[in-house]
Image: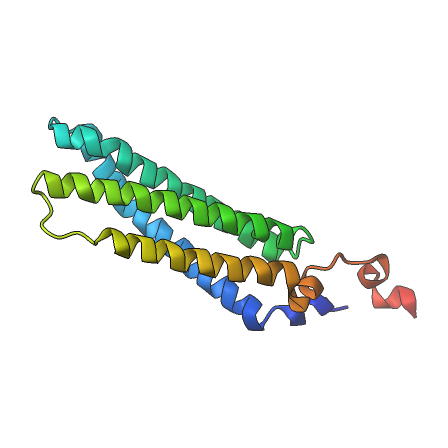
Length: 171
């Protein structure tokens, strides 16, 4: 017997999966690119390196939190776990807060680089705020979708005993 819930995995739910799959890839690449820099900053001998090392480490740890949240949510989704909608309604807030804190750390890192003359141009604070506001809006939309959408409710509904039984047993 085929799982009737499989046909529910489309539309906006598929878009969500693609969006957060790409987000997972972007965070993984960002983390991989950042780790050698974190290493160099912690082993640097300048005051700038010592000031920036904790910021770079903090950003890396937050990227790791986002990666873990997306991976675990993906595991729940592909297992069709009934807890998935509740997980994502909370997980998306965790991802947003991690990203917002990461933006603050990145802004501080850019400010230190500007002050030290290592960076000549950095985004304005308004650019950072706009990015966080857009991220907040996207988070609110997706949380509402996970909590209210009928497709989500059908796709992650618990499997009943009759749905689980083989067709031969019902004949």
